[in-house]
Amino acid sequence: QVQLVESGGGLVQAGGSLRLSCAASGRTFSSGRMGWFRQVPGKEREFVAEVRGSLGILSYADSVKGRFTISRDNAKNSVYLQMNSLKPEDTAVYYCAAGSSLTYNYWGQGTLVTVSS
Figure 1 (cartoon, rainbow, N blue to C red):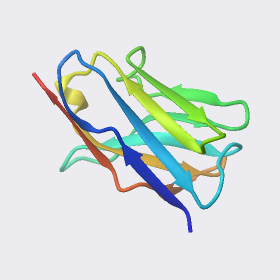
Figure 2 (figure 1 turned 90 degrees about the vertical axis):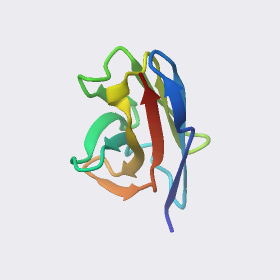
Figure 3 (figure 1 turned 90 degrees about the horizontal axis):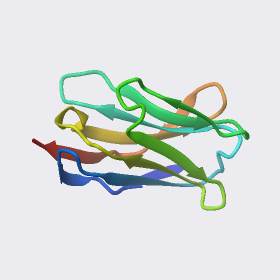
Figure 4 (figure 1 turned 180 degrees about the vertical axis):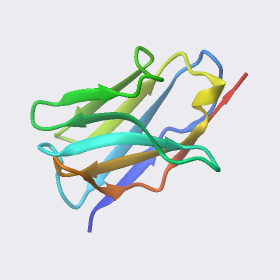
């Protein structure tokens, strides 16, 4: 059974930083994709960043480019999201996702990030 467990969320002031972690178990995703999404109540879940394929190709949403950095540790079967220069509009529940090269098959439970102004 595949499980994704996120950690690292919390409350931070605008301009601050947080680092989210996601540990996967049950299978490896070194040749697939791992990523982060976020959701605000009443809105659709939106893509934040991903790392995909054995080459580790990175993609980011325009809203986080230059502020967030995604990384993957294949030995630990984990993915991370370093979030810098946080803004109140980054407040959301952040979800870790993992899957094949074509789609996301697995989702974590989410971790809340709150950025105060």
